[in-house]
Image 1 (tube, protein in one colour):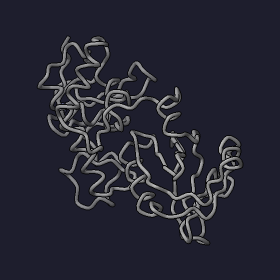
Image 2 (spheres, helix red, strand yellow; image 1 turned 120 degrees about the vertical axis):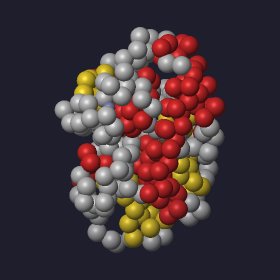
Image 3 (tube, protein in one colour; image 1 turned 180 degrees about the horizontal axis):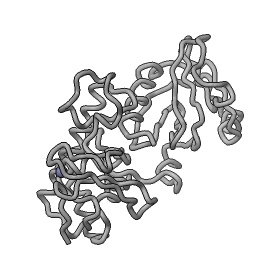
Image 4 (tube, protein in one colour; image 1 turned 180 degrees about the vertical axis):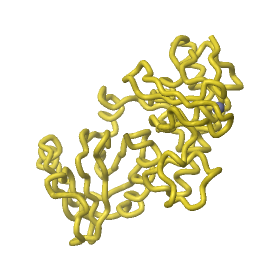
Length: 282
Ligand SMILES: [Zn+2]
């Protein structure tokens, strides 16, 4: 699953390429988008901005129209010069937005909807997102408040699940979930009621730092949290860049203990942790 920082980078690249430009071509294979385009054509509108909200990519057009896409497992947005050869088959194309000589192409997006700003706020399919970890409103205090509020309502929720809940903090995916909990030295299966304010503060600080670092360094699709053994980024495989994710059975980079993996409640997503660095507390 794409992590929030990838969506953030995608939105930033799309924004840079398209914002302020007039749409000169619009094509889609999705019936729900095509019918909106028939009634209220996209061509002639201006792309106002592109932003990421958690894992959603939002493209704002003039005339109060927002194209919302969710990448899920396989979806992606590519940018091309007009006429340039696509790096995915045409059959995978779902949306093409052309602005002069620039083309933004969405491949295999599984959720794509047009909204007005009002319907977007009301839409049941769009989760009301929590505080965006990469957003400008993010602060440790705001994140702490969001985590605490959730903990009061759901004291038995496990922190690993809470980190993935986009209504609490938006943008954290399954890789970061394990990495953040490790760096904060908190067992990901602990319930919210067992986690104190200082621990939540560590989580809030590390979440921002890790995700920001990966955006700033432009690591492509790879998440990097562990840099201790890194010589060159390219020479290292994925697992060599992380503290615990997909490292079950291997030695903990901090204490030498053995990393474990277990499926966690919501969605049975895999969770990785070091039992000695992240002791169980109930
Ligand atoms: Zn350890």
